Length: 104
Image (cartoon, rainbow, N blue to C red):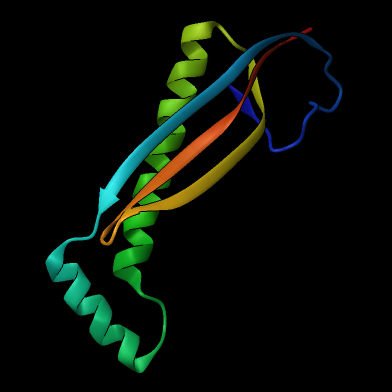
C-alpha cells in the first residue's frame, strides 16, 4: 500500500476518497528505563530508552492505520501524519492518521 504525506499521488489520479483512517497506541515508560534515561539526561546525548519506546509506538500506530485502510479496500493513504500527546505523567499516545483513497 502506498502511503504519502502529500495530498496527491504523483502520476496517479484519486478516483475515490474512502475517508479517515487512523491507528494509535498508548505507551508508558518503564521505571528501569526511566532511571537510566534520567542519568543519561545528566551527561547529555541521545536518550536511547525513550527513542526506542517512541519508535515502537510509531510503528504500532502506523500498522494499525494500515490495517484499518486495508479493511476498506484502499490503494493508498494520502496526507499521512503522526501526532503525539501526553496522556498521563508517564504515558503518551502516538496517533497515525491519513485519508484512505482508491487510485485510477
